[in-house]
Amino acid sequence: MTVAELYLSDVRGRMRGVKALGEAALAQLRDSEWHTPLAPDGNSAAVLAAHLAGNMHSRWGALRGGYCAGAEGESAGRNRDAEFEEGTLDAATLRAVWDAGWQVFLDALDHLTPEDLTRPLTIRGEVHTVLEAIQRQVAHYSGHVYQLILLVRTLRGQAWQTLSIARGGSAAYNAARLSESGGSG
Image (cartoon, rainbow, N blue to C red; front, side):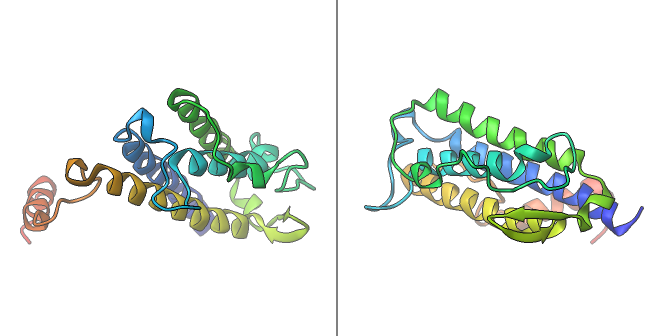
């Protein structure tokens, strides 16, 4: 397997993992809390979902079926500023917006080939390789998903269900992993 093949395989799996973390946080959010920011001028879960979806459609919509020469990673119809305005969409609609955005991004990743990674993709007039564009979005999307996790974690307080190894649970987790793998530590 080439490095490019390994990279595409890894980034596809990792971004599905980032999406799953976000979904696990959103599952703990009460419907009435989607529009609740942690501070004035902060982003609510609704704003984060709308912004992520808008970015994903804009950056990756032209590549859903594979690389397309001359593709622009900023669609003309996108209104980025509106993504940061608090709307009135209900929880079910916001989940659908979230899902649709991720579907576009993951479809594009799934259709890219190793040869595509060095090809040009323009975002707001700036030329990137497809690899650079992916890395830019990995950082961007992960950052917003972790904002979302912090937001929901704060809103849940003591009722939060961890998305990782619980505090004080590392030794038990490691022991379980070793016994599953047949390792002796």
